[in-house]
Image 1 (cartoon, rainbow, N blue to C red):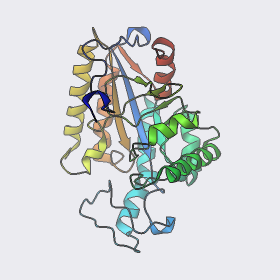
Image 2 (image 1 turned 135 degrees about the horizontal axis):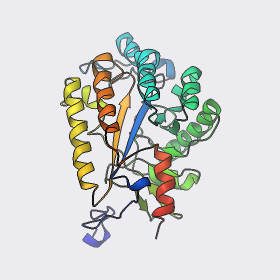
Image 3 (image 1 turned 90 degrees about the horizontal axis):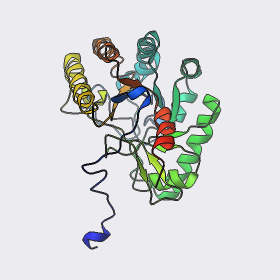
Length: 303
């Protein structure tokens, strides 16, 4: 492989990123995601070899083959039983739009939560069929999971997903999304502060990058947030810098959330405080990811 054959784009927009022309002259697009995964994680009840050991409150848990883990199960159950509803109240009371990354199997297990998402006019994007690692899947297996995700998602929500974020996908994930043809965007990228077109596909695929640094998962995955004040401070600093940059070069801020994590009271308070801080600023576009996709397609179409 020569330097010119390198299959990764290390340049992006470079020193001259495009002006996204956010609505009403906004300096920043702020987008909140609630990841709804509970009930689709690894569990022998779902045919898996062992219990879930990822993104649970107790980080020292080692899954045992053929065994359920009651502690992990109830940590995930908290997300759908209590945490989701706390987040639902925080966002709907403030009339702030949300995109849900919904794992299809999880959505199908909680029709009441899905009804609430639809009532609030939240976007329900696809987070795959199962909340499991796709890295060991072959292309055909991953293609099956994608088709199954669309099928079950459509049955559970009443409409097919227009956006997709697998989160633990493969090098083939974006190719499969482009091949399927019904998605308006993919978010399996962390590569930029703005959306961009992946033009190696025909037609080009819109990528709306996600972020893990401004994600509540850092409460439960190694070094990260230890309390709500740290979470609030990090989100506020991220917002302040991007808001300042946005005077000449508007950007986008993603905040990733989980009911089982930031839905806990001591963390939810910091989230509410941050939302109220954002609402104090006037040059902000609060939106869903599908809104970003539609805006970008209109104002920044592929070359």
